Length: 87
Image 1 (cartoon, helix red, strand yellow):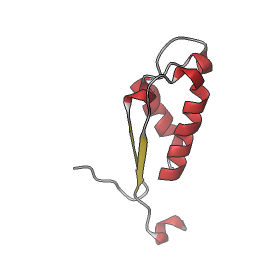
Image 2 (cartoon, helix red, strand yellow):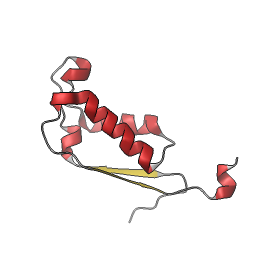
Image 3 (tube, one colour):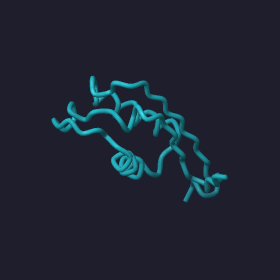
């Protein structure tokens, strides 16, 4: 079981994202990889599901032709109670 605390966002993805070639962004032939995606997700925090998916879409667009596999992304967000959002 996965427990999301208020404010958490969970990002699920297919391997097409982490196996994308980064040559359009870095000039190299390396693949994006799990560690890079974890760093990317941490930099987004705090975020909403919609914003996380939008950021991944922008990332995939930046990879351009480096994306050679289908990609799917699903994000789930646990909202904060209204009293916490005002703080």
